[in-house]
Image (cartoon, rainbow, N blue to C red; front, side, top):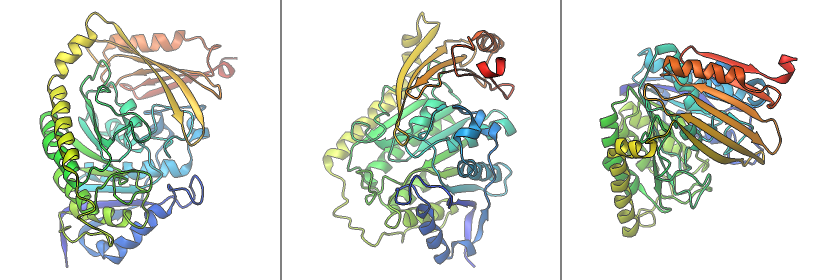
Length: 442
């Protein structure tokens, strides 16, 4: 019997009961074809590969990460809780050493879901990887985590959640935001005052193929990971960089995805996007599974693969080399950049407009980060939308000093309850979540 070199756990959840519409790209068939392919290839008969059922993420799991408006019960479906719970299950079996690695093949995806949630954006309502990660920290204590997001769309939700957390390195490889939703993910999006340099974006030109992605991995991502020294590496494993994907403009192949996964060597992979339901996902997911298991993936090939058509142009190759040099230089200069940006400042303000494309909602948001020499600094969010429900939210970071803990509670307690639909507090050091609103006060 064939035996995998690495013990691999697989979690499947196709979410049969949830889709934006019957014909929408993000529907249950995304994983059904993959499931069929894996069964046909006999993957489940290989020794050291084991399947697990997903768990159900709790409301508290979601509240560690998000401010859901009006609340988690109203905004989040059971399918989303099971998707996040599938990632949690994958992480738990790794942490408990039942397996060496795990791959959560779950939907709906989550990497566009930011801290504030008014609705669905980019097919995402809650952030699956962030909920998984914060569940791990609550259960196992402080962890130094690297998230490498290989979805074709910029992981703007994960970026927002970990914007000011230097213990979570976020690296996003994506199609340039000037050419694709969500229109973000540029080099100057470098992290908040407590984590300048720990948010790294690599905006790649349309037409990037295997050569380009693997160059970025070898010459930028892996060197940075070696220097960061994470306890865990998580691959936010979007698959819409594939050359057949209907929503994007890249030339990555299933073989390339497998090779990237082999070199990256993540502890946990979580499926994100990927909308070529028949032409890509079964082959890409199979390649990732084989690579994570330490099995031969050299024969992975799509039926319509044409190496000549997918060859990367010399112009793109040169562009990517210069891009990597630029990004790596900024990583090495992050302390100097931080000193220059924060000199003489006690607080940093960040104003944004966030569009929920699926639900047609525009959010208007102001974030204020305290510049603290002892910790990441307390964070305040003031948010409203064109459907109303203005909120005020306070986050006390996981590494907070006592001064920032006290300031966080003072800010929450003194917030004008008549001015907002709801006021929230996330106290991460003590794993406490509080809310107040006019109806509760009256």
